[in-house]
Amino acid sequence: MKTIYDQTKLKGNKVFEPFELAGITFPNRIIRSATYEGMGDENGKPTDQLLKKYEALAKGGVGGIITGFIGVSQQGRSSGFHMSMLDKAENVEAYKKLTKRMHEMGTPIIAQLNHCGGQTKEESTHMPVVAPSKISDYKAKEITKAEILEVIEAFVQGIKNAKEAGFDGVQIHVAHGYLLSEFVSPRMNRRKDEWGGSTENRFRIVKLIFEKARKEVGDYPILVKLNGYETLKNGMTIEESIKIAKLLEQVGCDGIEVSNGTEKAGLATIRGQVPWKILIAQNKKLNKMPEFMKNFVGIVVKKTLPQPQPKNLFNLEAAMSIKKAVNIPVILVGGITKLEEIEDVIKDKIDAVSMCRPFIIESDLVNKFKTGKQTQSKCIQCNFCIIGTLRGPFRCYYGKLPVSKS
Picture 1 (cartoon, rainbow, N blue to C red):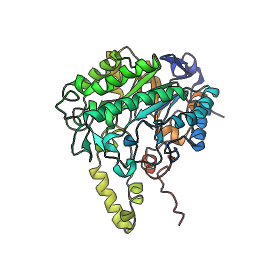
Picture 2 (picture 1 turned 90 degrees about the horizontal axis):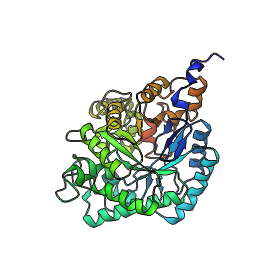
Picture 3 (picture 1 turned 45 degrees about the vertical axis):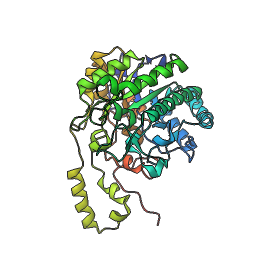
Picture 4 (picture 1 turned 120 degrees about the vertical axis):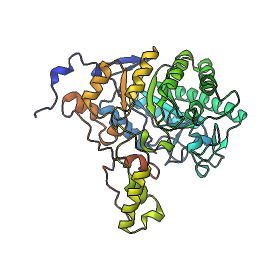
């Protein structure tokens, strides 16, 4: 079969060479970025369905896996479908089977830990929704100082649990408008006490998580996913994210994955097509409307939902700026679909790339890149997969609504 990739380029190609991060050896520099799977059971334990997804990624040649976010607190549980949790000792044992299998297959696996903050819902957590400040971006009460300390302890316990469960490391979620991201963001943190105001004060909660965790787990790898910028007024700028990246390095962070976006910012994080059809299909009232009305609503949604440009490599500038400012590894995520793009990014000294949606449609994409079968993902960036996780496990829809069983 005629290939579409010059195999001579593989010689000396750093993309497919092993690299080390905090003592973890990755077989190549293409990592599966955290992707919300919705494949925990009612207690947040990983299901066999999730294990099979990870096995497919490992067989497909991925350099490593960062799990979909795992909750450290019931109060921070996602409003999406069946979030995985690591807040209980009994869940640790369930994860051991998963990490053991990944290690048998030679694939490093990192647990992403998260508290959803103002972006969760009370009907999901059965607890008050909390955020650093009361602002229009979400419906939440201002978190108290006592509750902040509880969140810190929850993250520390989550890190300890992840280590015991056999994960190669953890990634703390400080992006996408979740609780820790809300704290470091000047837009979302309007506090006047020691937890708000200056960059150092807004960073305090993350700093204390690291300090307390290091006393418990030593040099266990702890990475961070960080917003390199926010597309909304008064949000994070690249200059501010550089300051935070330097603070992360000072407190012992082992690597930074650079992203962007919040729920309020619409498609800033994922970009591509506006998935209005599945948004309407999942709303009982809207789905009952005649087709011509649905099409009208779709036009309105596309005009009102923020959709920043460009659609590809949209975090590269921020990642490059952070890389120049710190001496720890930097991973780029966001709008990466082509092998040529990955090669250029690695040549530009970014340590690795991570991808989300391309691996939903093709778990074996890395092998396809390496063998020359493909040079670009088949993902059409329809974004149905992202909306679909609100009601069920993640999968590729390829721009088509699921057929009703009724």
